[in-house]
Length: 491
Image (tube, rainbow, N blue to C red; front, side):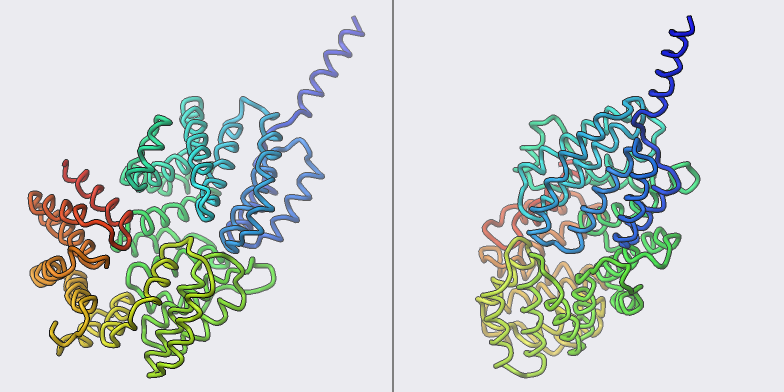
């Protein structure tokens, strides 16, 4: 009897010492440092947790977060090739853990989703698609098992939005797996999560959820009216977080709050404890250039000196070329244009566009100033550059089309719809058979205006007009947005 009692006690002890998921105070602290981009501090905390609590599987999930944010900040191909081998060992470790925990399937889903997002930066779309499908299935199963586990919504909302915004061909490929996306539903899921988290036991997931919500609102939905909302959501995030700085600055720039972006980036937290993030120098250069400040070149050069990734190198050299053009230095412009052709990569659409522009005639100076001022939200200043011009003042067809398109954009964002529609139509008439994106985008924005006016037949007409234009720049992006417009109005 005593023998069996000892065996029973031994089994109880072994069971209590078995692998488990414990998102304890030390792990939460490490996670918070990761989200603030203090990655080395987080690594130290995770190493200590593994020594002191070797049965805990959460550190292996958080290791993947470290890799994810490392690649987000470096965009370095060598880092990517080195780090992606970590995925399988982490999943194996987690798969050995407590299957009754809500973190069991969630952790596997997070690792798959994070690697899918990282792979998409390096054009590994097929594997990324498989990982998104895997993450989606795991989160769906976890939601059925643990309907009150709020963190499930973070991944589900992001995946919903991602799939809803994919080009039609890629969306059809993903539908083979049995999943379809909806951008608006994904946004609603994330927003409801952000509102629910602060009063829940999962409040520590708040910062990351705001990060994904901002990504969906700005990069996927292109919602320029979301500035105040996202600024309010980021307010509770600790001001020492470098990720908070990125979110606020990026959203400010994308929603035409240029001065706020400059102020935010100029006051960002600094120190050796933070992960280097050269992209913030690129953003500051862009914001200063939108304000027509030629000193923007300093920030672009800092970016080039410190960045060892794959994106925006060609685009940065193009911006430096524009600065020389603004200075009246045509020789300097040509030198930097040569760099656009010879340096960098073409993974990102901006770099592809930069290369195209480098192989085209130099931009008209007045159109360039109007374009930059418009991007910064300085609509009156942009209009001043063009108000004494007429279409016949421009020699080449590209500039004639852009003149009409640029006026359409300025009037559109200044809430002068009749003038916007007039100039958009002129851009469509001149450019519908050209490779420039101006005409297709003009048709798309015309559709947006009519949709807002609830004139659905006209909205449908212009969305279809945009879709009818072929072989132009940003084809996939514009087509995707036009199709999303047609779905919204029920066509």
